[in-house]
Length: 373
Image 1 (tube, rainbow, N blue to C red):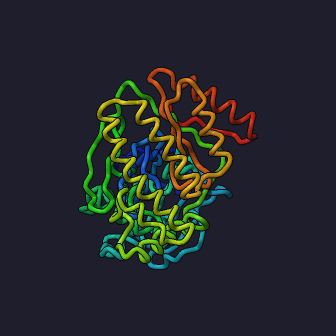
Image 2: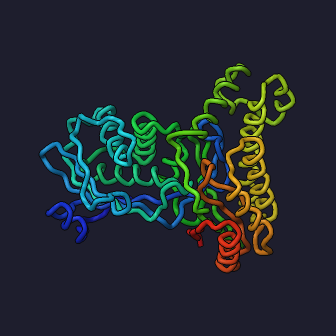
């Protein structure tokens, strides 16, 4: 959903003392399959979730960007910075700083003005469901409307990624931003992150999706996520290829010359790209059993070869696999916490999700959140 007619809220007026003039939003996303492939120029298959991040804003002439978040402003007061003073501070406001910085880098400095911004999000932070991309895209949509910027959804996604990578410092690929900008209900986005070729793939009515947040949060801006990307770059250099996308399943036999753990990292990326292609075919044929088996194989690869799962996620996936309504389950997102996506027979998803979440909470002590259905 792009920017809409002004609908000022009581919260905006209470915080800033004036009405909002622009409202925009963007959904979170769940990646059905194709994990850690996007920054390797690979294939992905995300779809939108019902939860959205919304922004409302008003332009001002003082050069001050003042921001209030329902979820992240701890003291009830907005936080501020001046246009042109954007620098990484390591806090949540970096995502807003990143957008105004990126727009300046893209040549829109003269259009930018001071800003009063209210953020409200239904997408849990650290859930593996692109809460950051939903914020970046929704803010860019609002600014596009308020400043009359001639930018397409794909251009918004590219600028959002630049903000997250270069100012926030999170080495993410382009999938999240494109998914939040382009995905809609009832279909998945089959995306080639190398060429940006994309195709909408309908989700068959015979199958339901379940998304459960494990209650274990993660962060893309630091830690092992960054290490995995560096390992892939190292492996590509040793193999003499620009990116791991240049390798296919037939090349796996040649990987023995790589040191561990690089051979396992490459094996995951190569086989995951192949699973995405198979998953698209399974969706088109409404073949739930085949798609479910691909979910399961993807999780095993992420757990064993890419080593981005954690015990809580593994247990949640296993509880899904053991449930009679579930055809397959896997972690979704970057890993090290976050959410699990499961494939269920149509009509059985809600009861199954509640059953699985209850068992998971009893066994692990974590508090899960059912986000879909």
